[in-house]
Length: 111
Length: 301
Image 1 (tube, each protein chain N blue to C red):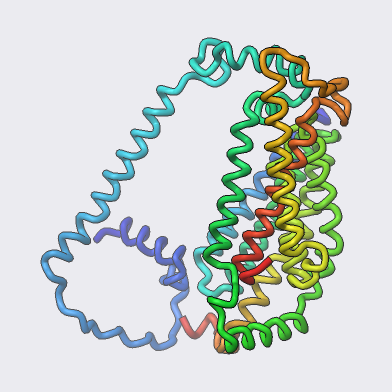
Image 2: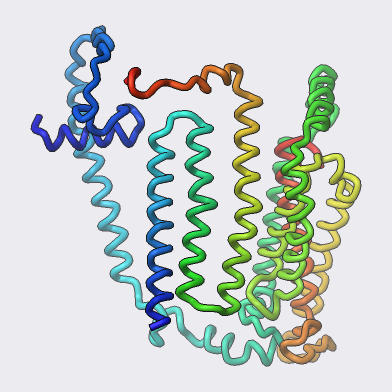
């Protein structure tokens, strides 16, 4: 019974990570500006990877392999936000008219 | 055009970010619509119409052809791990059965690439050295391909760069760099016991050096890794590899004793020359990785 419950939790976590990956891929296509795209790409690298690996940990149970996978998440969470931050910094530093991109458009009126 | 293709076209536009709403009829607003853009291009020439209409059909045919060729190849491949595959012959049997006894390496792959086929690995390491040499021939700065104005601009940019180092990257580098370097050294030194070895460990070491260089600048790396270190390390590693393997090829053929102890399998100092050769290969790969990065970004090491 407990085995069934942990498997169920693992499958739910992996399915939600697949949802996060799919929506972030959609976001990469749908957004037009680098910073918006980077927001959605960074989402899949942090939240999606965490959900996926925690689902796999639930499926595997407590073992050395799941400890290693948790380490993978720790290192990804260290590395990937820094990489996204550096991309954003490069974009902000090299874009000559960055304020043009930051304008907030009222979605209801300007379609 | 019926409703279905219209929906797929709308979905395509929406995914590509060209349309703002998937169902515009659900969001009726009383805002005035922007004027329709006036078409200024006349009807397309006959050739372009033919190209545009036949493009998707031709693309579909090409893709289906490629996919069927690849699927047919996969279908004809022998099954993985079956005993009577053409790849399973007496060479593989000998490697698997006598590898531990003859080379002393628990990791059979290390025994193969650094003992039975060590000559091949020497060629691979030399290819890396050749690649970095040709990149240096093209990109290395000397007095003939630079002028004083460019150097002045670059020195100016370097000063600006040094004053605008990214603090987040530096902090993460301080945290991550020891772990990366330690892991690379572990992979190299444990090459004869576990999967890994000189190539992968050297790549990890080179990646750690690249991370340090992008966080703290090339001048900090130059304090412990400059052109002189690069030359010394690659030369010593390649020459050492060549000399050691020449000794073992010349004297160790036909079951002659070489005098190199194989040690107990599984211990860290075991498997004779493989331990040393792994270190040599790892040094070459790490130097080459960092050399590529440095030459491409700065034109010097």
